[in-house]
Image (tube, rainbow, N blue to C red):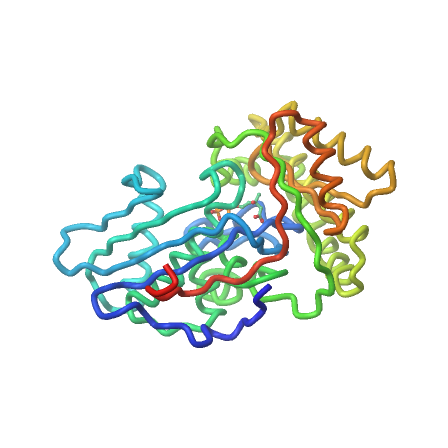
Length: 349
Ligand code: DP6
């Protein structure tokens, strides 16, 4: 795993004049979830979150400013991006243009190796790669903290994918500029754990309710929301101690209860948001059976039906087999902690 978190060591600023820049970023899975914003315009989370960046499913994004173009061109996996996806990318490019004092439209090409919109964090890897490539392409020399803050404006979970391994995202305090300044991610320097995450993709289709809409509805209508958000503070303190001690069962227990609590807030929203499917429940049962058999395995779920199971690398094959048996037909991937976002050179591509 790459753990170099300096501002972009030995990284090219951009491919060449007029060529733009390309960045690769990996998704991250939150163990303490971010769910809910206290400022939607500035994308400020209610609570701190903590994640692990994966070594699989990278997103590769190239940004090339084009002075001759009339408008931004955005392609996602080779197809023109539409609707909300395009609007979010163009909004992000506007931030880059404002910050750099430049006005050219950009050509943006993004390739995901993860099913988009299936609760597998494609917006985290997507906006981390866009922030890094876009900043370089528009000539901005930003350190990782500033990049992380910027990536948050695209998708709050993206702030964490700038970093490899475990990262914590601060919700910041105050309002307006103060909140914006205080909300960014940074590595967890003293984590002493190298787990595996077995990912059960029970349904790779796009979700019916976007995480953005679902979290807004939860914040506005769920009577359980405030209690869960408050519980994240204690969960974060406890998980950081467990990570320091390399205590996988403690990390897993805290992560599992935090995720189940987040889904409970959604189930209590009006109308309810339910991402679980029968296959999700079957995998959760499989995880309980593993634990009953003495295998430390713990589940976490995001805005979708897929389940990620935290375990020791030595148990990953057994966990993967149990997951396959629990939900026949699901696709199973095993990930380890992976690197932070980085710029790539032409030669690497
Ligand atoms: C359940 O970061 O995708 O994965 O900030 O609106 O883009 P926006 O939401 P997003 O939400 C991620 C929610 C989560 C938990 C997490 O990653 O912390």
